[in-house]
Amino acid sequence: MRTHYCGELNGSHEGQDVVLCGWVQRRRDHGGVIFIDLRDREGLVQVVFDPDRAEVFQRAEQARGEYVLKITGRVRPRPEGTLNPDLPTGAIEILGLDLEILNASETPPIQLDAHAADASEEIRLRYRYLDLRRPEMQSRLRTRARVTQVMRRFLDDQGFLDIETPILTKSTPEGARDYLVPSRTHPGEFFALPQSPQLFKQLLMMSGLDRYYQIARCFRDEDLRADRQPEFTQLDIEVSFMTEDELMTLMEEMIRVLFREVIGVELPNPFPRLTYAESMRRFGSDRPDLRVPLELVDIADLMEGVDFQVFAGPAKDPDGRVVALRLPKGGELSRKEIDVYTQFVGIHGARGLAYIKVNDWVAKGRDGLQSPIVKNLTDAALAGVMERTGAQDGDIVFFGADKAKVVNDAIGALRVKLGQERGLMAEGWRPLWVVDFPMFEEDPANQRWMALHHPFTAPKEDQLDQLETNPGACLSRAYDVVLNGTEIGGGSIRIHRDVVQRQVFKLLRITDEQAEDRFGFLLKALRFGCPPHGGIALGLDRLVMLMTGATSIRDVMAFPKTQTAACLLTDAPSPVDEAQLKELGLRIRSKA
Image 1: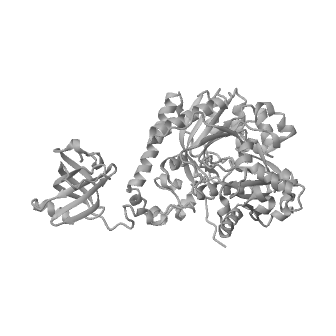
Image 2: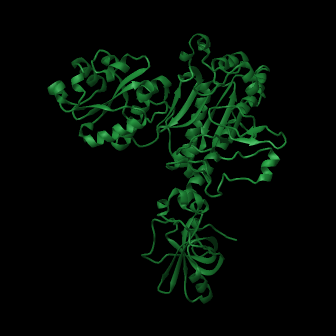
Image 3: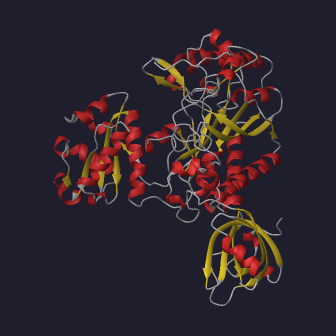
């Protein structure tokens, strides 16, 4: 129907007759001359209709916003003084020779211009097909398509095979609730939608396929937030006979190629690496935002002997932590601003936020410090804090003292918030790898060990004896890739020996019977010559969100769900009729 896209036209097309199809972005009547801005996925072009073509002019008068038109016209330069340098097609216009109204439109419930972002997300999701007409949304989805294209080409060139894995599979708990699908042919039994292709991609390595990838759809029934959806997409990768260093090197090269080709950004080579322990110590997080220059400083040893139990208690507790966080020039913060930060750390479990304003430490010592807690600290403790943090006059030092997890969560989050709000955030992209994760974390409530990543992650070869003697100190062969404070991928070398896998299951209190019931097919495969293997999964939605500057993964998905896992566009989930339930052998229990 068309010869060109609207946004493709430029001065090189002058004098050509073209046929365009698209939507009316805006219609203007200027003294008997009608201007229509016609929009398609490639952009916008101005079409001019003169009254000397009466029939065509009359149809142009009928056009309104979001009408679908087919226009035949001739490309010509815009008159002097009417050029629009902000528009790629701003040097030319189309003289309208013919116009066909392909479809009319009701007045849209949302504006499809610069004010579209003012609409509520509920309205945007309910009328998603309109929201997706916006250039901003189309640009994001085009970037997403380009990302997957580059990923596929890179992996194909590296000898990876694109292999699909089942969507209907066995329920094998992986940390979140499964979405269950009742089976009609096996009454009373259920399939599960995969939380990831984890077990199948390991089986592919046991099948000798060596290098696998898939842009995989995954499903998790968990509480949602900005970077979570009940269904999401990941680039899933598994390889055989490759060390973690080799795999990480290959993956960061792919990420560099991705940023270079899609958004024209050069990422560092190589990515820096931090151990989990160092990342937690310096930043309170295993996904640190390295654009923020602030760091946590341990001061527990300085506080063990002070009378101030708020600090002394955690300092003496093996599970406690006491840290200081220096904010340069933070002495100008008002009491009201400090109260806001106190409320913020409270969200993360902190019971308060102690601070010291450094007014004139060099000349006056403790008399140059301003804080209710100064009187509770010794001269030696104060001097130690000032020295370790590098505090200077005009700064403020915040403190965290509690269980280590509370301190890491609260002060780690405060570090990022201060960086954002105090203008300390550096520009650009700061990727890194976090490595040497613990194999297990404690579940104090149930007095048991839990896998920090998943139960198929291998321990470091030189720490196999720790599985028996000291599981809490055992490190895994896991690795996460982090970009600007967001984890964009994670993976590990897997357990490839049956005896080690059963040992890990035992530590996790998965009995032999439970292991056979849940993972029997995997355990059996491990006994038939399983190669050493490992992999990684990169969150495609998160990656595209960062690359496009979106604030939520919902804005880089065509048809996302709300934070209550509902689709406003289709009104899903919805009831099904009694006949369907009966066929599946199901009955809805009435609400009490």
